[in-house]
Amino acid sequence: MGFFFGCQEQPKQSVVPAAKAEVVYDMYDPSEMAQLMNKMYAHNQTLKQDILAGNIPVEFPMDFMEIHSAALTKANMRNETFEHFSRIFIEAEKAIYDPNASEPIEARFNTAINVCISCHQTSCTGPIPRIKKLLIK
Image: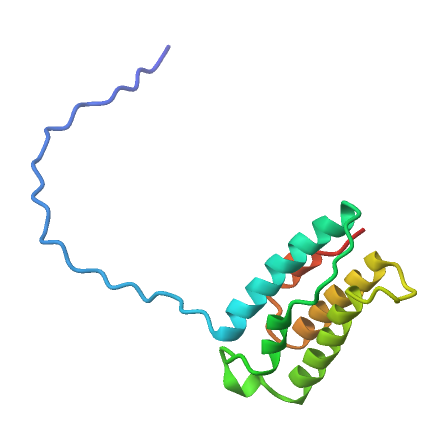
C-alpha cells in the first residue's frame, strides 16, 4: 500500500506592497583610537610579512604616538592602566626598529604584539583573537 503526497496549487493572490518606510541606519562611527588601532594592526600585519621575508624595518611610525592623545570610544577608559600599557607598547614597538638590539627581531615583534594582547585583556577583549594572528610562530 503506498501513499501519494502531492502539492495542490494555491490560487495566486495579488499583494500590493505597502508604502516603503524610510529606513535610517545607525552607522558605527569609530573613535580616533579605534581608527588608530586599525591602522596599527594593518601596519603590524605588513611588518610581520616583511620580517618573515627577511626585511629589516628601519623607521618607527611616528603616528603610533597618537595612542597618548587619540579620543577613546569611552573616555573613562583612558585610565592609569591604559596609560601604562600605552607607554610599554610604544617602547616595545620602538625596540623592533632598534638596529643594536640583542634580541632577534621576531622576538621583539612578538613582545610588542603581546603587549597589545595584555592590554586588551584588561578591557575591550573582542579583538584578542585577531591580534593573536599577528604573532610570529
